[in-house]
Image (cartoon, each protein chain N blue to C red):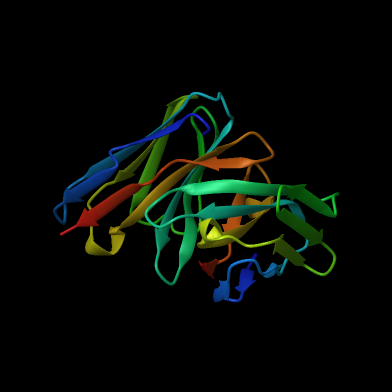
Length: 116
Length: 110
């Protein structure tokens, strides 16, 4: 069974700092890994998608890396802003039940607060 | 935003009553999923679909059924709602790569 762990569970830092959020998964047989952002009471917004053959993806101040063999991904946030405050979720896409379809397994998230 | 609409957005129902949640997409994506999100458990897969009339169980499927008669619609039914099914339900769609989520349905069973 695939398990995804995110560390830390919560993080509070002053504005302007560079941050690293960590995600680890137990089964390296994944199709891709996706990082999401969730604001309170809202749905999930996709931030970055890394295919299993890729090492990293970048979008603006966000950079995500993937080391499939070691079962790890990091989300790097540069020059953090109060608007970055949210919960960040990591999810891996894998073959559920060995075929037919695939699903996402989620970590429990990192709750991030950026202090003005 | 990807074209995903969940309805209703909020619902309060009584224990023992049937409830149906609807997910509608305009993206013509093959895969559709239902998740529930609960404090301490995160997001867990209930059921998924890989085509019209093709569905399968996820991690927490007990007490739930689904149907997909058209590509664009994926229905989640609670046959007899229980208090343990109070949760926020999310629908997601994908076409082999990136997954997109709806805004969620907050269901309260009293």
